[in-house]
Every structure is written in C-alpha cells, then in structure tokens.
Length: 258
Image 1 (cartoon, rainbow, N blue to C red):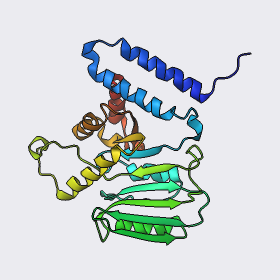
Image 2 (image 1 turned 30 degrees about the vertical axis):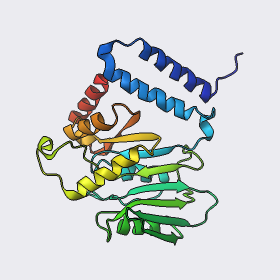
Image 3 (image 1 turned 120 degrees about the vertical axis):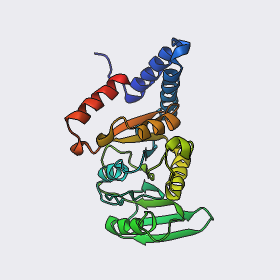
C-alpha cells in the first residue's frame, strides 16, 4: 500500500499544476493569469518552510462597510471580543495574536504620531468594551490607527494555528475619485479605507467578505478589481441567514462566472 501523502506534498503538486496552467495561457487570458500567479505566490509563501501545519500566517478580513467582517472573526475566536453593530463600527486595524502562555489580555494602541497606549484586562468582555471605546466609530478617540490584542483566546477554533494572527479591518471604499463614485466620500471613510489598504501588504492570507444581501454590487466589484486581481484571496459569503431565493440565484451565477 502506498504511503499517504502529506499536506505539503499535495499542496506542492497543486502549486505545480497551477504553474503548468499559467504557462499554457493565451495573451487574452491575462487577467486570469494574474489571478493564478497570485495563488502560486501564496503557495510559495505557505510552503516556504516545508511544513504548512506549523506555520503562523496572518489572516485579514477585508471588504466594504457592513459585510460581517468583525462577526466572522468573533466566530473564529469563539468570543464576542470585536465590536459588531448594525452600523459601521470598526475604525482601527485590530490585530489579534494568540499566546497560550498568557493569562491576561494586553491591548496596545498605536497612533500615527507615535503615541502609544497599553492596558491589561482579565477577560475578553473587558477587551470588547475597550475596543468599543478606542477602536470604533462610537469611541472617544479615532486617532488610534492600529490596535494589537495579545491573549490566550482559549475558545478559538481548533483549526486555527496554535499561535494565530487575525486582523480585523475597517469597512473600506475602493474609490478612484468622487466623480467616479458618483457621490462625496466622507472623511471618516477615506481615513478607514487608507488604513485598511495599508494593512493588505502586511497580511499573508486575505478573506474578502461579500454579504449575501448584496451579491454582485458595484462597490464589491470595484474593491475586488482594485486590490485582489493580482492577490490571492478567499471569498467569504456573509449574512447567509438574511439571504433569499433571488440572492441564491445571484450567488450561483457569480460562482459560474468565476
């Protein structure tokens, strides 16, 4: 009986298969070539140390406002630690790092002018209150560009790497100009968009959130075309409980077109 192949071997073969497909593409397939090349780059990064199971990759969620990004991360964390409300909430880049040896949660806030704030909490509910105050639109001080949370996260999904890095980002608008948008872009949204896009380069794996309520929206298409045409990303359909038959058909059509 042949020995079962490891994850590394399977992923290496998938990577080589993608490279073979790219090499045979025609000039008119340039857009698809760029997407496949981005996947190859991701495989190269993941397989770089030869053992995919032991690597810690940073995973970031991206998308337009109110796409369920914070809710998705809360489900992975097993804790209601990130503020999520009926209105756009997140205003800072919030990075969550797991350290199983810690007993408390350390929250570090960083401002673009170099200022820093550090506090410690005993449980996730206290962290949530702090993030709601300092990392959201409803908070006291929007100057904190990034917030790092380090803690044990004992209820996190077991499929995550033992020492994971998750990144929550503000809802962003991939606009080129206000004329192209067709409306004036609020200063808060401009600031949030800039923060989110800067973090893309610091993230290994990107999750692109699209709400089932608005499948195929122009805002989502513009976001994807601007930032994920040449980067590998995983599409995540959120708010599935709010979908209905008409949107189900849109989802199927989008999948067939891809």
